[in-house]
Length: 505
Image (cartoon, rainbow, N blue to C red; front, side, top):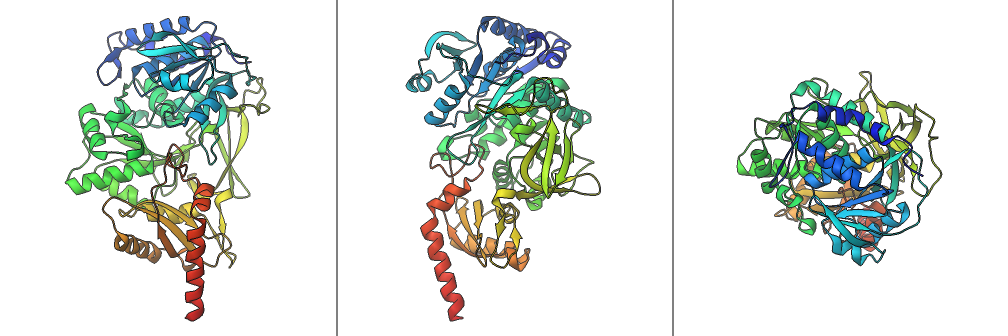
């Protein structure tokens, strides 16, 4: 069962912050509409009342005010919110809806829901989204579950993370407090709102800061699905919005900086903070971004930890991923980062990880290697399961080498392999216009900065890793096992060629 918290208490601090604004203050700005504080609260209350009897509300929709209203209405109504990423495949959507026992969907893509064959039918609409319902058996969930975030992870079947409203609010409060003195008056949501990072740090934290939130459609922002991402559209939207902050994954930061540099532009003077997360960021990429006026700062987090664990910021910056925020407890055990907090309750379909009566939360093993330095800043060492051990017995975190490769303008994507081998090799996806010579020069530059045991001895050009071919997750992380399988024959041939060359030499 869910709904352990009284509806009026879930998100109370968010609603108090909204209620404190002048009724006519603009809170949410979409592509073609604005929502003032009083209007937004009325819409949230109206939808919350209309959701009476709903157990799990799934939302499959583009970024926009309707998504924001639905998210806040689930808090107001005390029901479970299941955000569904638009990049999920049909099988992944069906998996998420079935595993959670979702009985209601709000969507701008009703045909996709109907095609799943799960019994959903249109029964109305809400703020431009179609409302669909089905009769289905309830699935057991941890009692205080407020949100279920399905991560695409490293396999085809996504895993549902059950999160508490209190823990998610902890995250938003901590992020807002960390950035409170930066005078952020307007945040532009660049990532899909269905991703927990943008949901917590890009929606709830700005609401607590009293900021306006721009929720342009993903096409407006430059998202082109399988065609990639258009940094020209992003730059135009950023300038038009007058945004002071946004959140990016490293690939978007790289594409944006390359476009600014090539077009002779710099970032708008309004920009005060750009958070970068989702994967390791090379210092060279951050330096290039800052030289173009982008105040980019790296952070770290996981879905199970409420999306944000640590964050760099102006005046408290470093080579790592920042100082842990006060809502979590971070320690290192045998080289692995352990995080304690109130957000994580367990996984859908598994026994709860946290009793409903435990107010202090549970410690979670992140699977990430790391260390805390003398100033209290967290440094990442890669995923423990990804660690490569060469035949010479040297340990190499592939993310370390990949971050340096990805800082090179010619390289769009990179995966480093070499477990059990005497040397490392890489699969490289070139940026548009870059040829084999440019890739070779990039590898040579990176190798010059690496110790010999971590240098790339052989590499192969590769087609883009994407959601469509099953070689990347929704947020751009490579699916390593799938990539290894896909390129097994080519990598084996590369290794044989190199070994033969070593023998002849």
